[in-house]
Amino acid sequence: MERLLFAYAGVGLATGAAALALLALAPFWEKRYAARFRCIVWLALAVRLLVPFAAPLPAAAPQPLLLELPASLPDTARAGETQAAGAPPGQAAGTGESVASVPQASGRNTEPEIKEAFGTAQAAPREADAGVPSAQEEGRTEASGASRKTPVLRSGETLLPAPARLAGFVWLAGVGVCALWHLAHYAVWRARTFHWNRPMESSAAQKAYAAACRAVRMRRAPGIYANAAVPCPMAVGVLRPVVLVPEALCESPLLEWMLRHELTHIKRGHIVCKAVLLSACAVHWYNPAIWLLARRCEKDLEFACDEAVLHGTKLGAPVRAAYGEALLAALKAGAGRPAPFTTCFAPGKKMMLRRFSAIFSKTGKRAGRAALACILCLAALAGSFVACSAEQPSVSVKSAELPSYP
Image 1 (cartoon, rainbow, N blue to C red):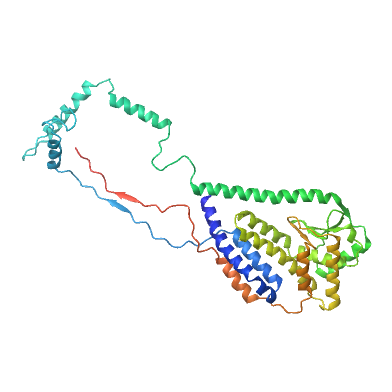
Image 2 (cartoon, rainbow, N blue to C red):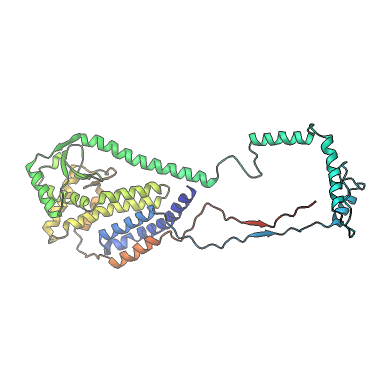
C-alpha cells in the first residue's frame, strides 16, 4: 500500500503542477484553440492521474560490508588476559572454575594428552551438577519464557504503525469515502428523480427528438422521458444513458436545439469522461489542483457541445440566435448544478454568460493538433521521473566464517 500511495503522490504532484500551469494560461488558449482541444488535454491529464507508473531514477547498488576476523588468537594474548585478572595458574579469570592446562607442542605428538586434559576438566562439573540445574540455568529459562510471552522493544521502536503505513490507511480511507459519497449521491438523486419519469406523449416533442437524432447522426436513439422534477433537459447514465425533458418544455419550438446538445453529450461519451474525472478526484482527494482540473473540464465539455451543435450549419446570425433563445428558455425554466454522471443544458447563470459570448464570437479557433501532441507527450511523461519509495536502501553485510577457538 505504501508503494501505491507514493506512486500516486508523485504522479499527482507532477500532473497537478502541469494542470495549474495550464489553468493559469487558460485565458490565452481559450481564445486561440477550440473547446474540444481543451477537453482532450484535461482528460489526458485525468487518465494520467489514474495510471501511477513511473520510471525511477537509477540508484547505485549497495556496497557490501566485509568484516574480516582473525583465524586464531595468539597464546600470548590469552596469557596476558589471565595474568591481568590475577587468576592463579589453572583457574579462569573472574571465576573459581579450574582450567585444564594444555601442554605445549614440543616436537612430539601431544594430541592424546590434550584430549585427556580437556576431558578431565569438563567431566568434573558435569558429574557435580548432574540432575541439579544451576541458578544461571533457571534464570535463563525464566528469561526465555518471559521473552516468548511479551515482545521486547528495542530503543527507538514503538507499537504504533510506521508513518508511511498510517498515511496509506488514511489515503485509502479518503478514497473510499469520496467514491461512496459520489455513488450514494447519484443513487439517491436517481431514485428520487426517476420516480417522475413519464413516456413522451407530445407529438411535437417526438418530432423534435427525431430531427435531433438525424442532425447528430445517432446510430441508436436513447430513451427519452418527460419529467416534472428536472429543471432543464439533461442526459443521465453511464452505461445506458437516457434523456430527461421538463414537462414545461415539451411543447417548446426550441426543444430541438436542446435535444441536439444533450444527444451530442451522449454520442461523444461525455458522461464517461465525467466518470473518469470523478475517479481521479477520488484517488487524489487531498490535491486541490485535481478538483480544479475536473471542474474546468466539465465546463469545457459544455463549450465543446455548443461548438459541435453549431458546426455544420451556416453559422449565420439566425442559427446562433435560435440557439441562444434555447439557452434562455432553459435558463428560465430552471437551472441547477448537475448530479454526478449527468449533464445539464443550463448549469448556471455565470456559465450561461460565457456560453453566450462563445456562441456569438466571430473569431476563428484552431484545432491545435501540434500543441495537442506536445501536451499529450508531456502528460504521459508527467510524474515518470518523480521517484518516491517507502523502502529504505538495504545494506548487505558479509562476514567471514567465524573460526572455532578451543
